Image 1 (cartoon, rainbow, N blue to C red):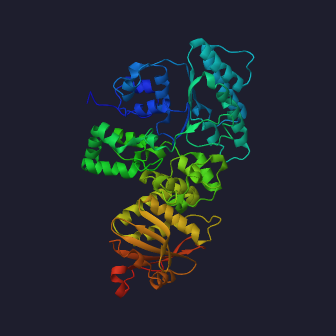
Image 2 (cartoon, rainbow, N blue to C red):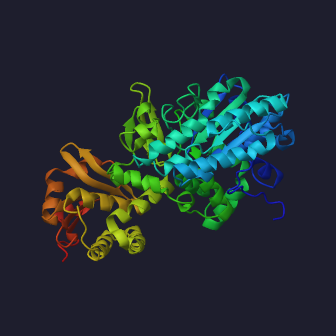
Image 3 (tube, rainbow, N blue to C red):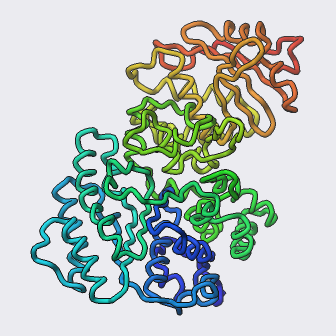
Length: 534
C-alpha cells in the first residue's frame, strides 16, 4: 500500500504533480510539437475538467526551463537547450460572475502581480497599456522573448453568454486587454490561450488575427483527456481494484469505464478519449459515479437550453457541417456550438463524401447527467420525489414489470400540480424521454418506419418497447395505430421480444389516463396486460 501511486484529482499544477507520487500520462511530445510549430499563437478549446489548466501549467514549467520536472518524459530527449523565458500566466477562472467594473479590477490585480517583478510604466494607465508595457519590460530585463499563457480565457464571459446586454460589455473589456498581443509580436516567444468555448476574433481578438486553432487537428486529438491505450498502460492497478469492488473481471471493469466515461472525439479520425476527471475519480474511489456532473452543471448551459427551447430528445444524434458546431459562441443561431464545445455532445462519425459530422452524447454519464438537469423543467419542485420514482421505475423495468413501472409513473405524475404549456403531445413525449433516459435505457423518438413514425422506441437488455402516445383519446386508439401501421415490422431483426405500448395522457388530470400493453409474441390471442387505468 505504501508504494501505491496516487491519481492527481484536482491537481492543476505540473510541478506539484511531478514532485508527488502521482500517476502522470505523458503528453510532452505533443507539447514540444505545439511549441515548435509554424505558429507562435495557439488556441485550444476543450470541455471543463479535461486537463486544460494542467496543460497550461506544463507549458509554464517548460518555458521556465525547469528541466528537472521533465525527467523520464518524452520532451527530455527532444529539447536540447532548456532556455528560461519570462512567463506571464493569467488564470481567468478567478474572473467569473463579475460585472464590467469588477472584471477590470480583477485584470488590474493580475497585472499588478507581475509589475512587482518587472516594474511599471506610470504612463500606462489602462489594462491594455499595462500589458504591453509589461511584455516590453520583461523582454528588456531578461533578454529573452516573453511567453503569455491565458488559461480559461472565456471564464468571464460564460455566465453572461445568454445575456444580450451584458455579454458585449465584458467582451469589450477582454478585447481591450488582449489587444497588445499582436503589436508585441517582436517580444513574444509563444502565446497560448485555452478555454471551453470559441468566441470570434471579431468579438475578443479583433487585433490578434494570427491565432492557430488546433482544437480539431488530428495530431492534437489526445492532447487533453486520456486514451484507452494510456489508461491500460498507466492505470492497470486501479482497474484491478475497481474490478474487485464491482465483482467483475478486469475486462468487465474496462467495459464499465468505457460506457460511462469514454466516447469523446474532437476531430475525425480520433482515438476514443476518456473524460480524465471522471476516470481518475472512478479509479481512485474504485466505484462508478457521476463525477463530471457532480462537480457542477453550469448555469449558462441550462439557461441556453431554455433560451433556444431545446427538448431533451433533440440533443445529439444529428449531422452537421464543421462550421455549424465549431463556431463562435456569441454568433450561434442554435445550441449546437455550445453543447459541442462544452462536451455535452461530441463527434461520433464523419462522412468525407458530404463533409458532415455526426454529433451525439458521448457516454452514459453525460446522458444521465443531462437528463437529471433537465428533469426540473417537467417536475418543478417535485424533482427529488421524481428521482426517487425514477429509481423505483428502474427496479420495475429491470424485473421486466413494465406494467408496474407505468402504474408507478401514473401515480407520481398525478401528484404534480398543473403547469403551463402541457396540453400538447410533445410535452409528454419529452417527459417520458427524459425519465427513461435516466434509467439508462436506449430511447429514440419519431422513429421512421415504412408506414409512418413511431412516437417512441425504448430498448432494455431483454425487451424492445414500441410506444405510441395520444392526448385526450384512449390507449385503444394508440394500440390500434401500432397494429394498423405494423410498426413492429421495422424492428423484426432486433433479436428481442417486442412489446407494444399504447399510452393516453389525460391533460385535465395531468397524468397517464390509459395504458395498453400487447406482447407481440402473443399477438394472436391479443394478450392485453391491462388497460385504461383510472
